[in-house]
Image: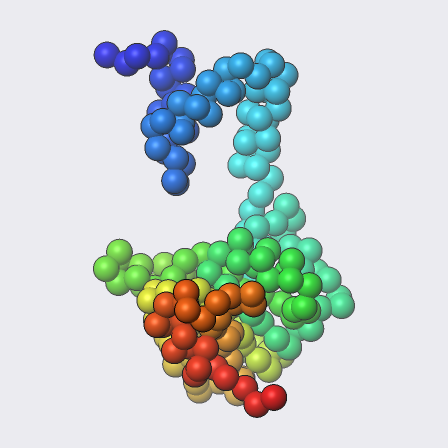
Length: 199
């Protein structure tokens, strides 16, 4: 039998479904919501419903958008000849916050992971190839994470785009700014050496 009253137990159960949220954290969040005003709880519930009703995928790049086309794709000042491929919308936001990239994006919504049953048909690979086939794109930047799955996805995309008349590049990886070499792992150091450039 649950230690909590049924409505609170249901809320905890729903919150515990969120990634990275265990039962204890879900209980803390539920108790926080319980102690908030009814108006605050209503605003939270309305914002959840609003996201579900209004947010969709951009028909061009598959970023999250309130409209049919996201603000990046509809910006006439962006360079339409360059597409940066990312795993998810959070990666797109991180790149945008750097303030240095002015091209377009393509959001895969995942990475290849055969052990988990994720093949090319489960992420937005076909749509990327169709965009490149359109002819306006001159460069595709592969900005998947430097994980095993991210690297495998980048290699797969590079091979898939090999026959197209487009330059394919990969983001640099290595030691972060302000990092200390003695704390870097072997793979990070190897990538830093591989990606070295002339000064």
